[in-house]
Image (cartoon, rainbow, N blue to C red):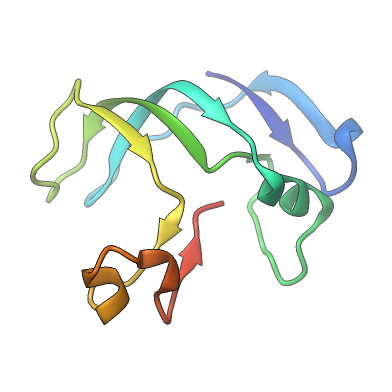
Length: 114
């Protein structure tokens, strides 16, 4: 697949258009074929080298997108190939009072997909 790749932290000059292997779907996950992608300010922090952030390089920026499920990994239920989806970059525990009330961005162990 083609992608804008970050090979090292820095300015916009560190971004390069190139080939990247299509990800393999693994157990418990789905593979999304993106139809639309967006960058937000978090991507500027990641590109610059967010303190404490450890990424495998090359890295593809972006945590916001929409598309359709291209493959479903073993153990995934409730999702089917061809279903349209929007990616939510908030990663909550799914069990605390905030997550259970739909406020996963307030989760005590909140993480961000990046």
